[in-house]
Image 1: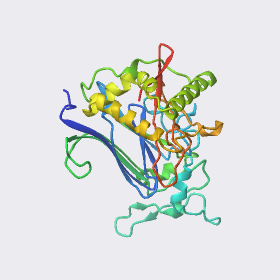
Image 2: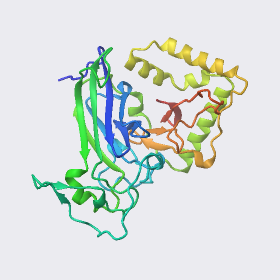
Image 3: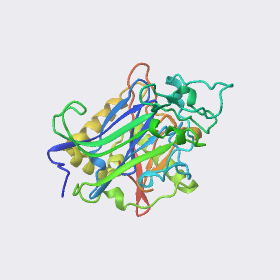
Image 4: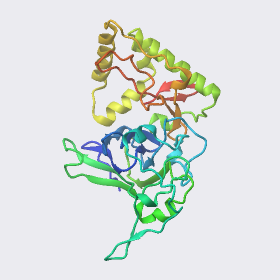
Length: 339
């Protein structure tokens, strides 16, 4: 049975969180964060990452300070579809916007739960939080829910009715007795999958080279990114487009976009930027790369430790700046921009 209707429907990955940050994945590809700042909900178009057959959605709860890769997966579960979780279990941006409870030095290590006066059910509160852990402590109020939803074209995600294709969730409260005793509660994977039938056929990154994030691969990826930056600063988009042919073809097909118009729009944007007085791009220092493997170790996400694309224009006062997100892969040993 084919559940996808990719010609007449839009596919959105939705998420809602409480007392945590979650990073969202589809088929091992990180597609966004939910829970930073005041935002507790996210709705992200993900049609370009759909594959034939079994699709997997996943959330990584409290993913870490930066997207840097780690050889060690989450202590609770294996990584989602080959994705590599960040190394640091604390999330600095999250901590900055939260009023974290403080430990009571006189409290017992694992106090018993409160009991509801009527039902007798267990109630976990801030006083039951165990702070003697690595990274962020578990809170009983943490919840995450995510779903892959198919909407009619023109619908408003979250308001209009859609068809939920895959749904997942996690609630700390019912299992808090065990969760609070874990030495490292986060990062934590939650995921689910379904066979959705036919999508677009094989995507070109699915058959690209398998990668290892060793010193040689990192050096090659950094050199490639430096060339992209040089071309953008020079206003020369053609070499970038030549290395992105399949990316443009697949993305435009997924969202029903005119490829020629998209190419023309990028050329116009760069040409317009080149005429700025200070059309300059940041040159990342050694500590400003936070590359990581994803999509079954076939893609490298080119981001900085702030989770933003590493290819970025130098800020110009109050103006918005040009950002160029990229995921790199190799075909026959040659670098390509695949997303």
